[in-house]
Image (cartoon, rainbow, N blue to C red; front, side):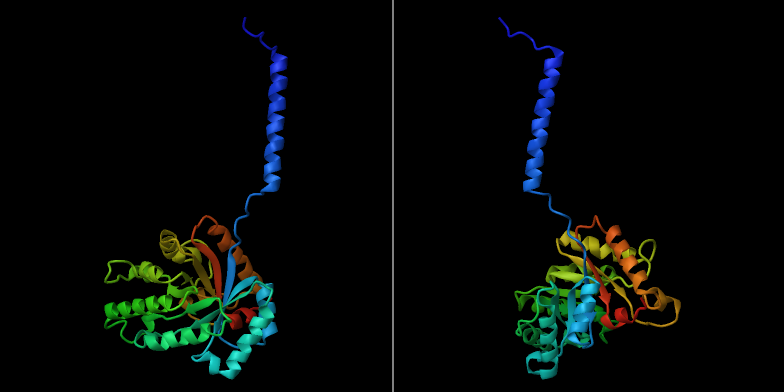
Length: 294
């Protein structure tokens, strides 16, 4: 004989008890293993001057700047004043989560890669930095207009050599329009740069967040290139005075307030929330940012 069928009431009661038990079990799993929170986009800041170490670190903490690109001279270990200052910044940053990156660069390095390699080796040998941040702008090289192909090739060789010479991360500043320049490899220049370094900062210098000719608009192509390469990319904003003409004014937050800038950076974070390569925003630079009115 077949088992007697349960009444509808009994079947409903059993289903509810089963659902309740499953809900309790799921809640226990979530409490024991809460879902990971999405990473908060970070802030970075170029530092070309030598402000008092505690002043700099306190400013970085207030503005959530976790990465400081610290300009250092060649032969840092033998430059007593510069080395002493960097050590004081490193000491002040200890325990804060703030990271120091050695910052340097010159278009002349394209013709003298040995100088670039010596600079990087000297800076990183101090043990004060988590990596290097190179600001070599090949479009500023004298041969850019007369021998662009050769300049591009030497620039890429330089980046490859810097990357190969250290186990620490190497990040490069790039113009947002590098994708319009081709290479001998048949790739866009931004893609070729990303082949050779660990990360890039896109100099997306605009003072509007969305729409045509905005921070997110001009940075979009290289962000996509970085995503395809599986590497992080920062967008960047300017705070220094560049000039009174319309082109200069649209490239900087100079003349606006610190609150205006903070609001814009949050809006960029929100706009780029779905970008797999977006690693936050770099602000150029400490002196300009610090001078913005509150």
